[in-house]
Amino acid sequence: MDIELAIQPNDPALIPIAEKIYAGQRLTFEDGLTLFHSYDLLTIGQLADYVNRRLNGGKYVYFNHNRHVNPTNICAFHCNFCSFRRDPGDPDAYAWMPEEIVERIRPTVTPQITEFHIVGGLHPHYGFEYYLNVLRALKKAYPWVHLKAFTAVEIDFFAQMTGLSHEEILRQLIDAGLDSMPGGGAEIFHPEIRRKICPEKADADTWLAVHRTAHQLGLRTNATMLYGHIEKYEHRVDHLLRLRALQDETGGFQTFIPLRYHPENNQLGRRATWTTAHDTLKTIAISRLLLDNFPHIKAYWIMLTPPIAQIALHFGADDIDGTVMEEKVYHEAGATTEQYLDKLDLIRLIRAAGKIPVERDTLYHILRVYDEPLEEIEAEIIARRRRRIAEQARKKRELQHAQVSSR
Ligand code: V47
Image (cartoon, rainbow, N blue to C red; front, side):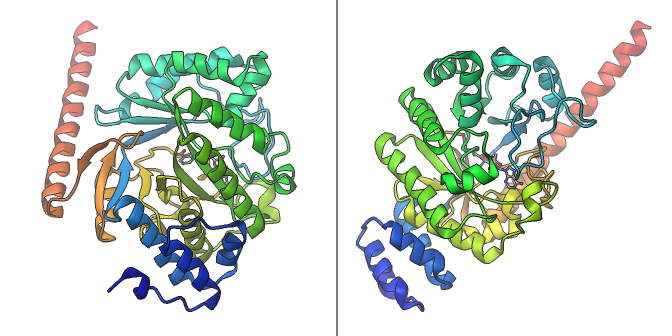
């Protein structure tokens, strides 16, 4: 049976939108609003799944082996949704020196890891050189790892601090080892909301201009949207369409990541609450439908929880991010998920959703397709894990032995 015939909207308002989607036509601002106002979640999800299958085949779900690195939580800005930032002198404020970062993460850096996701506070005193040195030190110590670092807001902060253009800042960062940029700092573009939640941050035009420049320099970047606080549906649609317009121009975005707002330990949380699973799945699906020119939609398991991320794989998402290791931004804000899932956990999660796990690098080159029987994959990964633990124990014994002998 034709897929078009199989999807029968319960909400009649969705019929003309479904027809446009089958015809491959672009959705408008009004279509976006109609979708958000509709409670027909299953139809919206089926439409998004249909588009994902048309764009990506619908069988593969991507993940990567990555690690988050947050060099400092000291931040000059005061975004009211942020639970991670600290002022200098706060008891739990920290700022790690580049070599310290290299050593702190060493125990978790294996030859299999392919990406460091590096974001943090805008340190008021450290200067641009500190951030360049973080990249240089990491690249020198772990040259095989892709550095996805610094949001457009950080790039704009460095430009303000130094008086250099965004282009010059990006060129210097690329020289120091930058390979691509994450999608953070986008929040909600509309000025009505942006000025209430992050008035000091680069505005929408600046955020988009930084990504435009990055794309012109050959960097691939991601984009995000922080939803589920005080914004209205029209602000979400406005946000998505601004991203779509830039992507039409440059084609440099890889993935869109809707970020579910977490209200604990931040000022905005006194006014806003957790959003619902229904809203999350609808937002993921509508992102897939409106962002017809974005290759991928990510269901970030840290934000959504693994069970909801798994369901999102049937609502248009084709990526769940990676192993992450040591996530701080959302856990300070009340995220209850693990801070780390290993490769096997991710593979099991994706396979249990009836999809084929595909390990990718940051730029979506396929490293391995996990399509063999699950028991074989489990046996292989567990055996490798055992070998690694035995090897670490052997190295530790050797070190202790050498220390005793040298006394
Ligand atoms: O810009 C901060 C968000 C973002 C909260 O590019 C919060 O692959 C929810 O951008 N509740 C940074 N969200 C993280 C980010 C990201 C994450 C995963 C993958 C990628 C990628 C990018 O975190 C910030 C902000 O929007 N954030 N505080 C909070 N309380």
